[in-house]
Length: 319
View: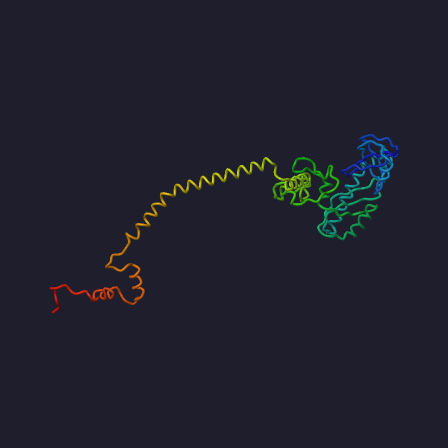
């Protein structure tokens, strides 16, 4: 039965499984392992544990040896070489005026390959830069374009919560984050409050998103409980009785006013009836509209000249 040990590499945030090949390792022991890139330096996170044959076929990487004094010296020397290579690459980028930003440099343990990580907004032609670096460093050169989230993962730092960045400590892969997650959790939609050091939405918005979404679906599908239904029916009945009482009170208060209005309506025609000798207002208005050209003086003269009206006896006469 094979044994598998978990080792964290020199610049890695996660522990990878390696076949131990019966090499005695304890937790915290440094070791040299073989990966797809070549030899790498790492630290044992979990001691060897037996696994079935089917599981032992999956990890293709294996432990080469337990780190010795020379390996420790080489590991310390790699940091110095990486700083030198980073300064050299940054100077060459500045000399050629390339629109790219150098993030980090990573040497393999056997120094056969060096990887330069950079960010850029557009595609960059760095073929001349590769030739310059290969001529200076005398090794295989690889330039890798990364995104801003990968940049924050490699550099590290502190988040708004006061702890180290999740991507730089324990996160393996980045999850897609959207503004809907913040809306679903009733969080502030201010980009400055929900964005991380990379300038993108914080990865922690996805931690509780599934719980909020499941609760909302359950709330839509499940019917209302019996207690809430009875309480709703009782509340509707109480509101209906209050509305009836309000309507009855309004009708009782409006009854005296209605009686007074009816009495005034009955007395109104008798009080406003015109005298027999005068024309009603409607007729006078019709007469005025029928003869709009006549003045008030002419109408008075016509009324004075009506037949049946004579001058008083003994009145003064014109001489």
